[in-house]
Length: 246
Image 1 (cartoon, rainbow, N blue to C red):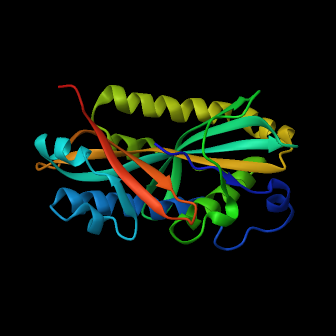
Image 2 (cartoon, rainbow, N blue to C red):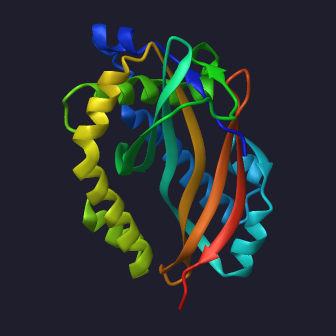
């Protein structure tokens, strides 16, 4: 799995109004592409064609999904993380899980923790996130400004989680993440402001889809991952399938 790190100036983001294209909802374009591409690949379309213009790194997980009788998928969310840096030193990490539906992004969790050293991940400057990777830069600028400010942070609605995940333990885990994040949001925002970051790095990690069987029932979770090339190219891989216990 390759991580994505994007460099940008927080001070500049806070000093001027955000450009029209800078929105956390930019991540919804990824959710839509992933859901449509996965469904097309499950229906028999060649993965390279299903996810175009993205490339496919590894589609080995498709076989396990088909063998399990999975015929469709719904985008659950993706890990989207911000690393705050001050004077060249990594000082604070924000971890989020972003859900997207109908062009809108909401969060299952937002967590923060102080850092005392750099993570071992791949760095991508903001300027390299062009073309298909540009939504990541737009969302990064918007999320950093949102958390440093006092505007409303959208969390996923409990009814949406219930409709996505029928397996009670998994659903309760998601609801607990929302509750904990709401309770800790003021502290996270205070930490972001106190960090006074002059750079923000962004990391995209695992992607999760809810796997559906022919009866329209949610049967488990399909794990996917993204990789970003130096020129902004996006590659997706389809990995593990984890059925819900019966």
